[in-house]
Length: 408
Image (cartoon, rainbow, N blue to C red; front, side, top):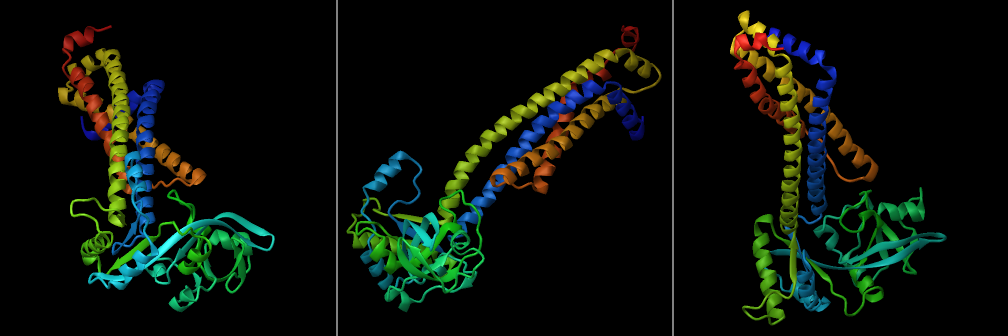
């Protein structure tokens, strides 16, 4: 039999048992849909984390008291660390470390912001030094940041996020206008673009940047810890800059040679390594669940094909008596299994992609459907179909002609 005859014969067999074919398709479709939906969400989440951590440029890092906390033990240990002081920031900045190009500082608070009767509760107030907007890659859509002279003079100026603008000023241009932050008047001099919701802390759209000297004077406890932002001279010098900053801080704190650091260093690389560890474990678990799901789908196909072989035993015997070769019989049943699996894979991919994008649209949870995921769905469904059809095809091809013809 040639390929076209095999296809026609397989299609006739599938059409002759529509309910059976549909149930087989349904099992494979659900298996592939679950796999595609989960992989799409994990893939989108990975890209989202990468985009979120891009605020930390590859050539900068943050020194703070807490660092990346992944367990209760680490949290308890971090609580014992002394706070990072403004004096330590000033001394580190004045040290002019060879591999460091800029040193900034920042601290945060939560306050209500208002403009007349319009209010926004729980705005994220971030006080930073004048160079920090460049170190952290803060994008200013309109207006400007403040100068070092304005910071030294403790000018009450602010850069606001999109939600703050919409809530307090509506369609008006906020640049040059006055708003209240914690009851104090601030002039808006800069506006950040719309960022959207964030899964990692407050959204940038509810953020208000003000000078570091102002937040220290008005919103910061004398016992609060600050963050130090350090930018290396180049990406290649990041490790050297970390070592220099670490050694300098340990020296300032008179930390013993074998004692642990009493501060933490965060970088984009460290955050991505942590996320990779978490997502890898999650991905392996999901692959295991998806594998079991696909295995069940394959078992369904194999059982249906075995039933088909039993029902069509006499037909197989007649065809072999008329000259059909074993490989023709084997190919037909393999093709039938593969066709059901592939069609189920296509429908499963469409359903899974729709579910992933539906979750994204309804909840904002990140998800992305790529060509790789489509190819993976097709590849998995084809492989499962071939493997599930192998034993029934072999059983059909090895039937004894006379016994097959005599079968009831």
